[in-house]
Amino acid sequence: MDPSHPAAPARSARSHRPSRSGGPPDASLAARPARSSRAPLPDAPGRTSLPPLDPRRYAPSAERPVRAKSRSLDGHMDIQAHFHSWGQFVFSVTGVVRVSTDRATFLVPPSRGVWIPAGVVHAVTAVERCELRTLYLLNPPADAPAWGANRVLEVSPLLRELAVQLARDEVEPGDAVADRETWIGQLILDEIRRAPTLQLGVALPTDKRLRRLCEAVLAEPMRHASLDDWAAEVGASARTVSRLFRQELGSSYAQWRQQALLAEALRLAARRKPMQVIAAELGYASASAFTAMVTRTVGMPPSRFFGHT
Image (cartoon, rainbow, N blue to C red; front, side):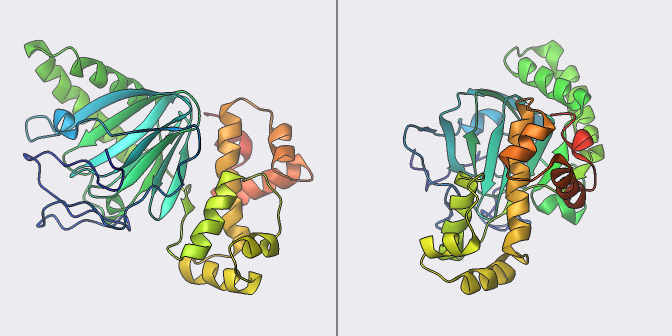
């Protein structure tokens, strides 16, 4: 499948226009490929690009408002950019994945998950071998406007096991499963509604020069180049890049890079690396300096923030 042409949504589901911003799509319009959609990070040599699974097989409906899908990915695999006519919540039971939209990228260890509203174009990159679980929801977990945008949520042990069980029941259909699926689906919706929201995710710009710079930093987060060096590589001055960061992302380069480093720290923590080692690999002079950055960024110390990864 051509990644520039997202998978067609199920005919029985209400169609939505693809959304680049993560905002609520227009439910009155038929879904169509998003001409501007793209996987935010470029294809890398040696990686395998896979089409999304047939969405009609897992389309939620009034009779089955919550559906579950399992998929195994090796560390060299990517799922092409696509969208759905329904919301979804994706997380990994084991391994780390990156979920990317046109405007942000999210590194997801097993204790975190990403809510993707209907119509939002997204791609999935396996950072390492992983077991994905995707929950397809006919309607958002709640009516609050916040569910019209991407958000990162904590995945409780209960939510994880409910999703695993619902996915298992999908491949073991039968009359006895119907009531059980309804009960599990209701519990899943309640767990997602109750899940704490985490201020994670690395914002991505639309300006081509700044986009190339951001993607280069994300590809080499531990490369300690100056802003002047990064700017020169995309044919701009540091002053221009600084202005674009403010205009496009509402932050300075230093603030944005902290989010990129935090995402990399999540990946390292998921591999059980000691905090001192993570701090050193990310270029911090001491573990205390790294602790201060994490606490300032997410409102909790690394021992707590990374404790469930």
